[in-house]
Length: 417
Image (cartoon, rainbow, N blue to C red; front, side, top):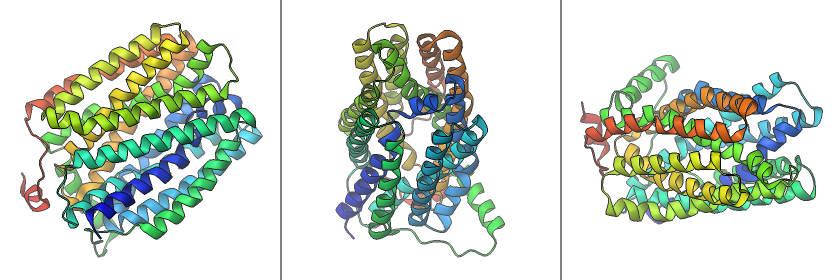
């Protein structure tokens, strides 16, 4: 297999999985509210989604590092298919909060099979096939593909809900997830990675976790970036999902589901623009941490402005700027982390990074949701900006390490103290 084919396969997987998942992203909060949950309960359900990610991130990362990246991806697709259908049942029956919490955790489990494994599959495959480009470029292409798929999925889901009801996008998502499974089964093969022979599951997990800790939180170039993750991730998830009811409130029509889908599509368009600019910015500014500091600081100010404006169109424009900042920094962050993690522990360390980010969401999402219940969406967005900016001191500590993105071999990484 050639590097070009590896990259094409990765982009295909990104497109089909993001397109399927994003069918509900534009209307998910409205879906939960329509099922009878309060604003606080809706974000508490989202918090249980992140609880599931916290509980299962490392175990599913270990699956990817021992059994294989392909197996992990297929398990994730199957889990998301089943839990999406369960969400639909809960909506139809107006279930109490507890079942929503349980099924939300299952959704989190499904996404943890994806997180880390897909990135690790790409990096392993590119290294094994002699890829000579930069990881920034590869991840930026994936970011743009994800943005295009997200735009199509979220806008399409909003339009489907507008002409039918809020449940139909979930049916469409389940169908597309079945297609995703078929595509991954046919096209995805583990390249540049050999599953380890398993003797004792407990000792095997212990060894991988110790190694992943060594190359993760105990690795100075990676540590502070991981610790900053909970603040940015928790703020971004709330900022995205709260935009649906907040924009409808500013628009003046609570049942305009197409507008909600459009808001998610706007973020997707910003993601495309951010992905397109990421590799260009990275070539000009070699200090990746400085890029992240500027992007997070700027987007924090934009989030605060979203909380004080009263115009729907101004808020929509600010949402696009905010999405562009986050999209531009994502490939830069991915490249920085992957350049300091060896292949054998890559999926597990990346899953540990996602675990910390999800842990922030467990606390931040219900806190901000309750704030919106008490004071409204505007003040909650101001609080979101403050939380996001708390990541900056940790990025400052990361910058002191003065470690650039390097095309370092796995052998060199394994020898690092």
